[in-house]
Image 1 (cartoon, rainbow, N blue to C red):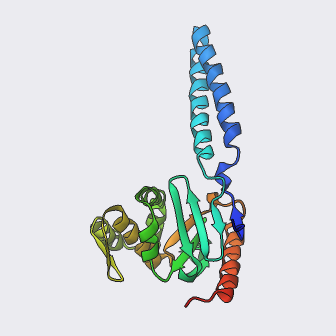
Image 2: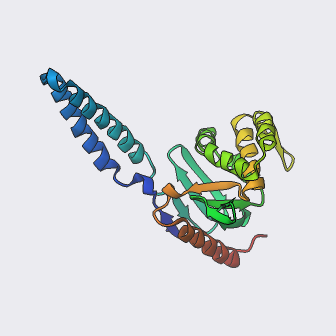
Image 3: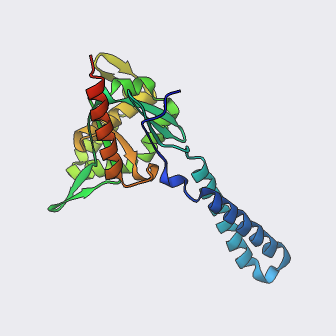
Length: 227
């Protein structure tokens, strides 16, 4: 088995076990207070509620994959708790940090953006479950993109086509894959990138990981130029 060129671990997974165990202890403490002391009912209920919340958050962290990015000679795999997605180096046009205008300033968004030559390979390989998860998680990103253009007409036009079939490069997509394709095209138009890797999926600064991806892409395409 070939060793990966690089791996990146999700920051979101950190402290998942500690949070889960701490939440369990707090929930049991609250339950004990609740059952044994009526005068401390409010305290017991508060401890129990906070403990359950901590356990849920901890379990969500533990559900994250051990590695979020794994690179090889042909491309890299993005791993998500809902599935995974493979992106080839020769299908990536640009890798950088997406930015939006705020007055006279440019603000970095907490993502790594990937601009692709073609969205088809992504739509052909992504699972509906992962596409659905990314659509939900990236809704604030969509609103940011539209707000940056200050155009309600853009949002209305997108919402009007979101559930329609998508035809890209002669291929037709329906359902959640079409929705994901429409969203990717909208984000590419307004923010410049089709795919977005969130900062909490990384174990270092997004700019550092973006630089790693660019350098690896450049080296691999030099060694294995596309036909």
